[in-house]
Structure formats: C-alpha cells, structure tokens
Image (cartoon, rainbow, N blue to C red; front, side, top):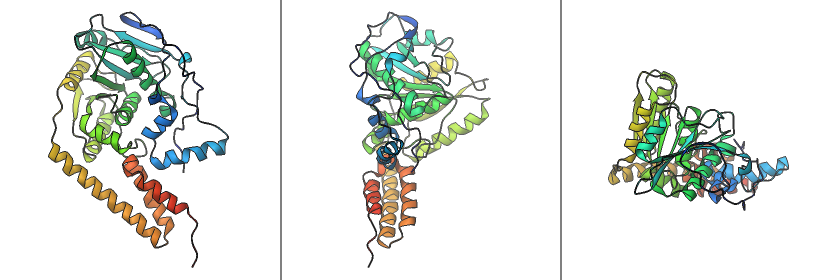
Length: 346
C-alpha cells in the first residue's frame, strides 16, 4: 500500500516555554512555543489517514530506515501572522485560523475591520503554502496556531473557525473534518474536494459523528471562478451524501479566483454565528443508510475470504478503506489481518 503524504520531518522540543502574549494589532513574525498532542504525528495519522494506511505506516518507515518523530514541525523555526482586535467581546474572542496557498503569512486586505467588528482573532502560519506537505506541515501548523492562541487569549470555543483560500481551502476542509472537536465551522474560499475519497479520508467514527452534528461549512467562491464553482458543488454534494447538512454556498460577486472580499467574509462569519438547524430524524435515517451499505460490503469481503478468493476480497477491502475510512474500523483491520494469514491447504 502506498502511504500518501507521510509525516516525517522535524524533531520538536515538546518542553519549550511559551512566549508571552503579544499586544493588539497586526503582528508579523510571531513565534509560538507550545506543542499539543493534537498536532503529534500519531494523532495526525489517526485522524487523517485511513485505518489501513495508518496500520501500514510503521512498515513503510521501517523499510526506509526512518522513524516517526513526536511532532512533525519544529516551532522554533516557524512564524505566524496574528491579528488581535483591541476590544475583547464579553464572551471572549472568536478565532479564525486561515490557511493560505502561498508561503508568506499575512492578513488579507480589508479584513481587519471585519475582525474588529465581530471580535475575531486571525492567525495564519508562514511557510504553509501549496508547495508544502499537507499532513507534514500545513495541517499541524494550523492546529498548533489554534492551540497557542487559545492558550494565550480568552476564546469562545463555539466561535473557533478554520478557513482557507484556494489550495488552503482544501486543507481547511480536511481540518474541519479531522478536528471537529476544535473547529466549529469552516469558510471554504475558492476550492474544495469531495470527502470519502483518496483526497480526503473520513476520520474515526466518533469524530465523524461529531462532524455531522456540529460542523457548519460555508463555501464562498467568485461567480467568475467557474472551475472552482463546479468543484464546490461536487464537494457539497458529497457532504450531503455523508449526512452533513449544515452546508451553504455564498457567491463572491463579480470576482474570479481571488481572496474573498471583506463583505463576503462578513457574510460568511454571520452565517457561522447562527444556531445550527438540526433534523434528528433525517440524520438518523441517512446514517442508517450508510451503515447498511458498509455492512453489506464488509459481508461481501468476508464471503470472498471464506470462498478463497483473496484477490477480489483485497480489492473490495481497499475500496471500503478509501470510501469509509475510519467509519469501517476496526472491521477493516480485522479483515486485513485475516487476509495476511497464510492459506491453509486442504
């Protein structure tokens, strides 16, 4: 099995001391020092790789003569752009962690006044553009940014959002899916993917159920950015197929492929601030359909193994692992173990 985007870099000092909290305003070259188990290589693998991929990782590393460090990045070498509104809301600041498609970390033009109005802190990592590893840098840097800001400021946990532009939006969707316990909403600006694919694997079941129930996603794309509009609708369709219903689409009018305007940002944040609409009956019915599909496919694999048709069983098991990801564990791991047992000759 090929491991995509293996997390190898870094040898972090997990006992580093935290920096003191910076003052309000737009600040460049901010450095953080606090690590979290949520950004560890093992936790990233658990949340973003499929079960069979994660199980294969130790073998992959052993073949290359490499080891998995505790953390994928060295915070001493990293910097972040931070914007803190001068006035703290009574319930605490909200937080927007923003993933950019280029390496320079900056606050998009005009966003400061929107953040001031809504009491939202902005943070974005440098050297986290499209050329960087997703699971090796972009994803852990975003998690570390969230954790460090949350440790330094009074943050309302109901207003912690992940957002991104272009390739950064695709990373933001992966993070929203993998970390629903951190991010309560996402603003996906001008790029996206379907979930339950090789591009975006589903996390463990407990996390995915939380994502279905609590995540709120807002897609924002320029009306002239026709390719990304099509991608957005494919992504939204897949979310609804996976019983994720708190999804909406907003148009950034008269624009192409560019960062959303302050006005579009404001509309998206207003949507995320609204209470979620829930349909418990519809969600339960949708989940039951997925459960039935998964159980049918798992029984098919077991039947093929029992009949001695291991090649066909492996092919279907691989498809299950790609489509259902963590939802199919531990059954997929048990079936994989059964397939690895030597064939008993009569």
